[in-house]
Image 1 (cartoon, rainbow, N blue to C red):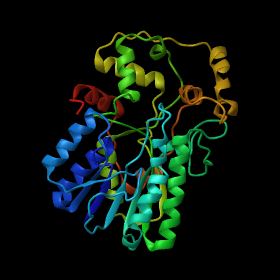
Image 2 (image 1 turned 180 degrees about the horizontal axis):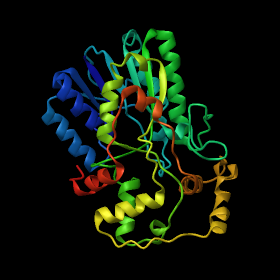
Image 3 (image 1 turned 180 degrees about the vertical axis):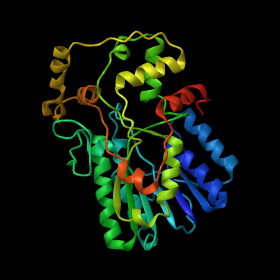
Image 4 (image 1 turned 45 degrees about the horizontal axis):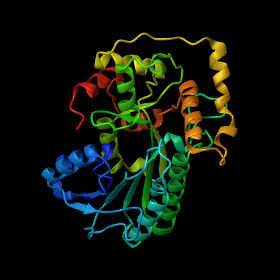
Length: 334
């Protein structure tokens, strides 16, 4: 098997590229890398160089996307994305317009191939009335990130029908593990818990679907060859779904921080529920208000799904999240 991995220097992409290289050989994987965004990506790029996979320079913000010639391939893993919901940046259009550029540029070479696209639960978002997302939940993204990822899903499906390639779309839960993104949730929570910040001590009831990065890499490899995953969309989750309060408590224990939980009265949680109102996602609202309202609603209602269809199909065994969190904060953040 010959593979292309976009976003190979990213958090998920590096784990996948290393696993593919170990199973199929370094020369079988073309690692597509974009402009380095932070120090961790720079270190991952050095790991890829030592691995010996061919490195392909790219930039999804412009055409042509690829700055180097691509060899032939059997499967393409499209992981490259812009996921910094906290920042109001036009780079979020990498998710849809960048995917469109990639599909246009590769269109003549995709026929008969497998295209695996990593989407997000945010492309579906909170079900009406709250609770766990299922395959029947309507897609109503409340963020530009979720909307652009959903648009890319539709582009992949349309191109597959027109060109004649197989696709698999994986809507990912919150991915964690050593090397998590600077400024992301697991980085920010650890820093706030170390300072005993009030917001991290609250026992927020919202449940969060989780997925350990090495577990995900194994799922992606299985997806590339499994015949029953062609032309289908799956939620990917370990289905453990801890609450945000439980996650904070576990991180505090993992980093050795003092932790004194606070339980908010039900009336106060109901009052906070006003953030669910569509008014806060109005286009006229500043980006920071829209994201603050969205994140607060996740603390209250969660973001979790039923991942059992994929789990049963692949017979996947997941790492228990509590032990995996311990390892995440104990290991080097590279």
